[in-house]
Amino acid sequence: MTSTPTATVVVDDSGVRIGTVDERGEVQDFAGVHIGSVREGDVAVDFAGVRLGRVVRG
Image (cartoon, rainbow, N blue to C red; front, top):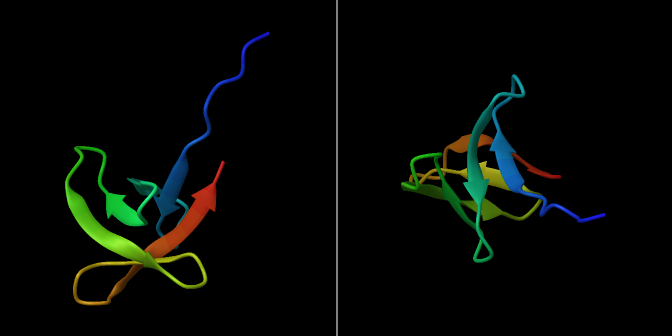
């Protein structure tokens, strides 16, 4: 049996996946464009500090 890696994703308030989080806490959309970062409490924000959603570790 092999294990598959789990992804850390960002979901909006509706639960729709909007991106991923790398090991540095940077949020990227699915095209790989850096769109924000993760703040304390697993909240993803854009560059202006506006909340994008929450981090879900799978």
